[in-house]
Length: 258
Image (cartoon, rainbow, N blue to C red; front, side, top):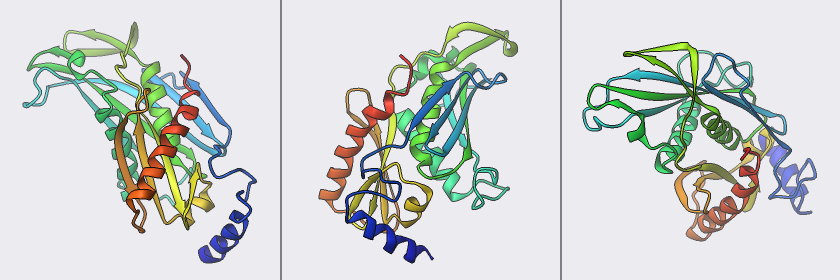
């Protein structure tokens, strides 16, 4: 069935359009709402076409890691639930969930989104841990970009809860916002039989030969790369995909309020 769909898709691609009549480099409609989860210190909901992702930020306190006694930390968790797609099952995290969480974590961490030293409460004893939980609500392709945008927006929305001694009072949220040093955002380019596609639908994504997720900073610098798919990429293809991702990340970034 997948091969039949791909054959039909490639036939349409010959006209330089896709099944939904978008051009290869076009995103579907993008919308973003912040502060949508009352129980979180920061949250955001992102819709890209029919793909919908919810991200929430929670602050926890803990003991710093021995090798970084003067720094806080960041954790990214992704849960792929059956609610969002029939291909997802309940249970332990799948390879897809682990990869998605690590790709988002790497873009934020290597892009220096948070100044971790400012999350230190008492050196060697107490620090803030920023936990980002990501939940796809509906999966119709391109979870990588939707989840990255939702995570960054949720961080931008986050405010610290009140700290009483070494315990957190989650019922009282302060006016202190989480400071973002940089705004790294991922953009993913898919390769389908030599055609570079932005924002694939579920059907397009399933026929892709390979993909490249590029973490991009505001100035166009690259913070991370993640290659996926079974087919290899040449240096020329990688350079072209990176160039396209940098270009399209500017469009994706416009969804985040100033």
